[in-house]
Structures are given as C-alpha cells and as structure tokens.
Amino acid sequence: MSRFLIRNADIACFDDLSVSKNDILIEDGRFKKIVKKIETSECPGATVIDAHGMLAMPGFIDCHSHTYQTFIKGPLDDLVITDWLVRLFKFEDAMSEEDYYYATLLSCLSSLRFGTTTINEMGGWDHVDAILQAFEDAGVRCTFGISTTDVPENEVTPLVSVDEALKRTEAIYEKCHGRNHGLMRASVAPAGLPAVSAEMAKALKKYANEKGLIYHTHLGEGKMETENVAKAYGLKGEAEALDQLGLLDKHTLLAHSIWLSDEEIDLIAERGAIPVHCPNTNMKISDGIPKIAQMLKKGIPVAMGCDGEASSGTRDMVREGKAGSYLQKAITLDPTVMDAGTTFKMMTINGARALGYEDLGEIKEGNQADLVLVNMEDDFSLTDHDHRIGNLLYAGTGHAVDTVFVAGELRVRNKHIQNFDEQFILNKCNELIHKLNVRTGYVKED
Image: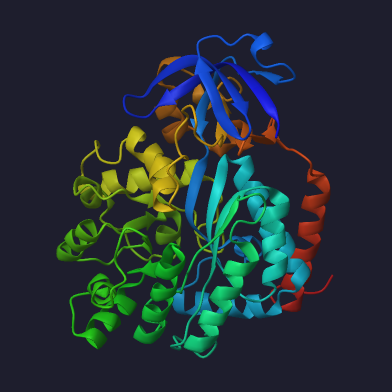
C-alpha cells in the first residue's frame, strides 16, 4: 500500500459549508491521521502533495449507472422512450467484446476524472468478463449486478428465465465479490417492474438477502409503465407492488423513483429503502421530476446517480447534483430545498450508506481513503474562496477536480489519469465508436 502526506488541504464540511485546513496522512488505504500539522518524520517514505488552496471532499458515489452506454450516447439523442429502448437494444447486440471493454473503461476513467470513486453498476451479461476486467483495470470502486428481465416490454427486450437469472446472478457473485483487493462487490440488479415478473423479483431478492447483497432496481421511471403496474397489481403504484412482493427494505436501491404517490413515499420512508435521483436522465428522456424534496423532508437518505450516458449524457456528478438541486427548487418554488450541503451528502455519505459502506463517504480518521481534491484557482467561475462549496455545485463542474484517490491509491493527479495513456484511450474509443455507428447503420462508411 502507498503512503501519502497531503498538506494544507481545506476539508469541506457539508453541515455548514465551512472548510478547515488540515494535513492528511493516508496509509494502508485509509485516513491514518488528520490534524493541523503532520511532520514528514512521522511518515517516512510518504509522497507529499501540497494541496494549498484545494478543496478536499470525499470521493463521489454514483449509485445508479450503466457504464457501457458511453459508446452509444449520441445515436440515442432526442428519442421518445419506446424508440430509445429499441435502438438501445440494437446497439447492445452489435457491440463486440472489445467494445464493451473499452466502453466500460472509458466510462470508469471519465468518472474518476470527475471525482467519482464508486460506481453502482447495473450491467449486462454479454461479455461480462471483459466488463469486469475494465472495472478492475480502471481501479474504481464498484458494486456490480446484471440487469435481468422476463416480461417483454417490446419486440427486442432480452428475456431470461427465473432459473437462468439466478444462475447468472450467482456467477456474478463468484466472479466479482471481493475482487481487486475488495474494491469490487456483487449486487442483485433486476431491471424492475413491469419487465420483471413477481416470481423473478422475489427469487432474486431472496438470493440477495441470503448473500447479504444490495437489491438494485428501477422504480417508477415511466408514467405509462407505472400505471400499467398499478393496474396489473390492483394497487396505487409501483412502490406498493414492490412492498407487496417483500422487496422494500434498507438494502434496496430504487433508481429514479419518479411516479410515486405521497402514500408510497411514506411507505419507502417506513421501510428504509433508498431512492436514487438521476435528474439529467429524467430531463433528457422526459420521464418526469421525482418528489425528492418531499422525500428528504421525510428523512429518506436519497442518493445520486449519473445513470447511463445514452440517457444522461454525463459522468459528471457535480453536473448531476446541480441539475437535481435546480429541478427541486423550480418544482417546489422553494430555493432552500436540496441545498448545496444536502446535495453533496447525497453524492457522498448517502451513497456510501446505501451501498452498505460504514467507512466511506466522509473524510475522517479510520475511513477508507477515497478522496477528491478540487482546484478552485484555475477557473474563473470558481472565484470567491469564502463560498467554495456552494460555488463548486452551482457554478462549477467536475472539470475542477485535480486529484483523486481510491482506497489510498492515486488515480488522478493534475487532472490526468494515472497509469493510462489518455491519448491512446481516446483514439481507440473514437475508432471503435465510429465502427459501431457504421455497423449499426447510423453513420455511412467513410
């Protein structure tokens, strides 16, 4: 394990938006010591980084993602959801093992560059070994589950039996749980109602409970789909259906959570389930706006996610947080809701707890050292040292991130990915994306 001494870091406090200048010693993958002054004699051999003027924050946690979609974000622009899904599955079928590897790697490296250190992935089964290898090679922290469906939403929906879904979920557990020195964990991640039957949902939740894994699914993303579920189950909505099936508890993550009744929000609060807010996707695909402010007032620890780039267009959690905050202020006509401190907590500690980490999401001694240093000095938008935290969210982007650690290992320094030839990655990915666009018929051959 590496040892780093970070001097003069301005550690952000999300409770009152204050900062405190401290030295930080990272050792054996954890925050070993955080005090005003640490002498180099206390940590022989440590690499010293002067963080003067930099804002220190916990690594961002993306709690809902489809990373491979980084290769298909352009061709899916400006489509209604039915056409969007059909085209998505067409591209997935056309992607090679090399495509999946580099799409996932590009997404992970982009996430790291923007300060995201943990990704909760709802992935696919095709070429899964290449996908998992990309996560390992990138060195990002990951919780990984595969999306399964057994009820057709359209003529191209990929379907598997309940038994096959369980076999694949078990295979994922064997392949990735505890992999890469514990950076990777398995999850159970069915796509969600109405594309998942009651039988599949219950069987996979039972498996998740037996293995102590999180259950990660979509909830209430589309108005029509939610109405169809309510009608099929004879209930008010999708969340009530999940509860009837025994799926709502503190180990369940609910991506989107848009079309919920007030009673269902109360039910989620009572059961302890965790909604994951993905505002850029919700806006771009015109899914709707969830009642996040209401959830937060109920004490629900909502997390944040970038979703897939085919829908959100971004891996930047700062942009995601900004969009979410602005939407809630606009829809409630209350500028105080989803304030900067609350939003950054949604992006850090709320996400950590949602994924089952008790030693992540805060910069404190003993915690795992997932750390972001933000350079506030080279961006005209980020002037005013007295209001740095709020300005980063409302005026900045993830491009301000300078340095990133994952489990005490340096992944980004001076805004450059470590241990990768960035130009090679960009050239390779552009080449593969163009070939994919040509192969699927959305771009003519040169």
